[in-house]
Length: 178
Image (cartoon, rainbow, N blue to C red; front, top):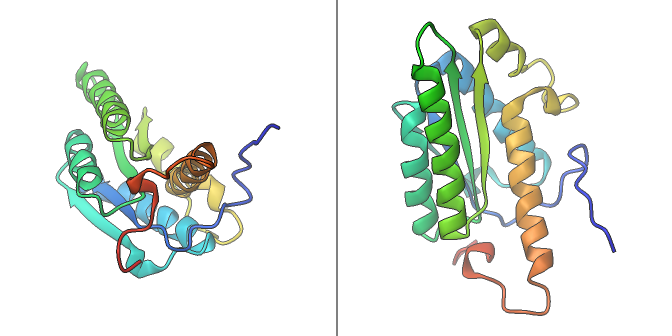
């Protein structure tokens, strides 16, 4: 049996506790990513009180905050949102690479699903084009925050399916009181 993920049909996010780790740098972009992620989670049935937004100074700080959120045991999934815009130096490559690796390592080492909603663009115009907030109810996938939230929900769903017939890992169970 093959299960595939269709991002236009969101799995059920009721009773999921999700952390959004959001960079404050390029706030004009990351605020829109956050709005998209919240819209996607809401469309999937998540309660607003089950979503915790944690702001960090910049994109480089996202992996450590995501790891801390995962290690807290309070979240089923973590959505990482940030923006790195290419400039005239190699700084862009170092930051983008470190963040991608850091999020991947944190997820693999903690076992908590984390998604990469970090834009890596050549310009602010490119970033804004990937964070549409025009109609998040019908056109959510044009917002990369929405897509990152959908991927997080889909990954929790897939991992839950993989654990059927065995003990469900604690991080996939809703936290106490949830």
